[in-house]
Length: 165
Ligand code: OFO
Figure 1: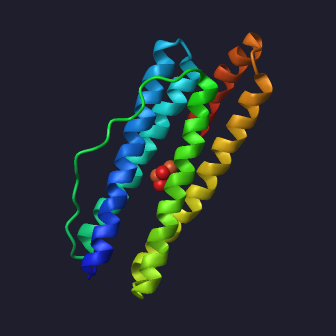
Figure 2 (figure 1 turned 120 degrees about the vertical axis):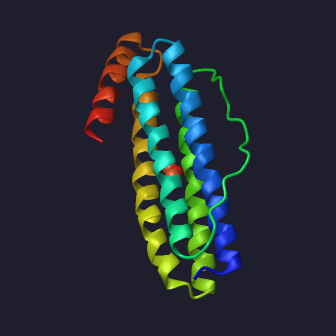
Figure 3 (figure 1 turned 180 degrees about the vertical axis):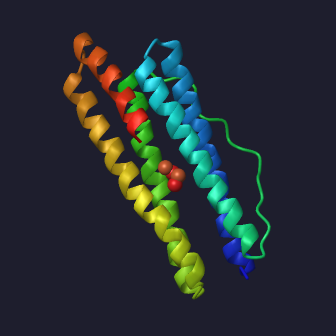
């Protein structure tokens, strides 16, 4: 059985994952409108993944006798000055999510809720991967700079990343 405070903290994370999904959906749409097809398909799949993260929390809360809540969401950024700025936002957002997961882990230990602590380990690993991926992408983007040919290849290659993940 979840304590009320753990339930509230997990519900807060549901909102964060839902907002992440919306934020990445907005990025996918922006990229699609700009004709960056590969980047767009990558971001659509990131958005789907965040929804999965949200659903995992919903199921966990309900299975442990709590009540998952979905709430009103903050509107995401819908325009970006460049695709580089968009990927900077992506990394920034993932760092924010990691901090939020860390805080949840901390609360679960404080409350000696080892089942929740164990459940959260999946998110800890996921955040390591997602932050690393965002950093790798950003490094590539920085390397490309204003090179149009580089952007063309990057947009093509990032699509493969979507298919294989
Ligand atoms: Fe990438 O944020 Fe979910 O966990």
